[in-house]
Image (cartoon, rainbow, N blue to C red; front, top):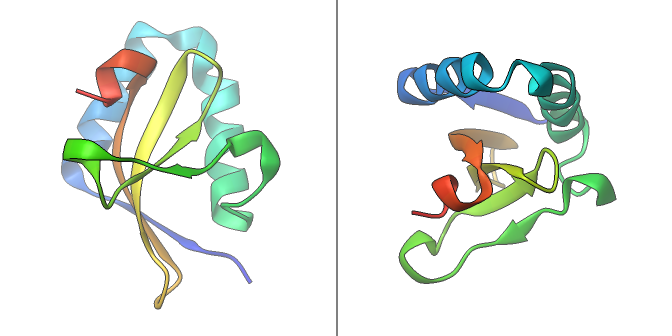
Length: 92
């Protein structure tokens, strides 16, 4: 069963800026979203819970340098995308 990705307006703006700055990441970003929708626990995504001020959110890897932070709504099989960017940028 596939999960539903929820693209908020804020996330869509962040993703557009990210992809404009990193056009080389378009293919791996698209692949990561496809994997996330099909199976958020796929090993290549390296899904993990965040701690501290980002507690309650999770992160998946696009590459070793780029991440997507997200909120998993397990009961409804929904995934709300929060932020995409460089490793250090998304954890601020």
